[in-house]
Image 1 (cartoon, rainbow, N blue to C red):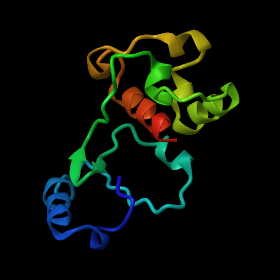
Image 2: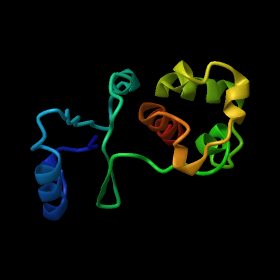
Image 3: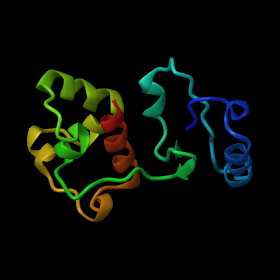
Length: 125
């Protein structure tokens, strides 16, 4: 997932994207502008993150609860948290409040790849 077109990236990163991503027949590359509908992201299980000039296929999760991974020690009211869970698609597998207290272990290996992505998207929101 890119937040701009390849032409907006520095030449080294654009080269990495072209060589590492665009040459895969089974990969869909999304170009996301700053105005997009979160519903679009719900259709994809695997998202490539570009952050600090590096390509990541999986966002890092921490050995904390699901809720702590999302709010990152910020005070968030329940209505906002509920909206974030819905918008990110995480509500599909976090169906009750008790599941927010589940511990994430070993960078999230106790969740599927798609679930880890949705937790990371929720954190971003």
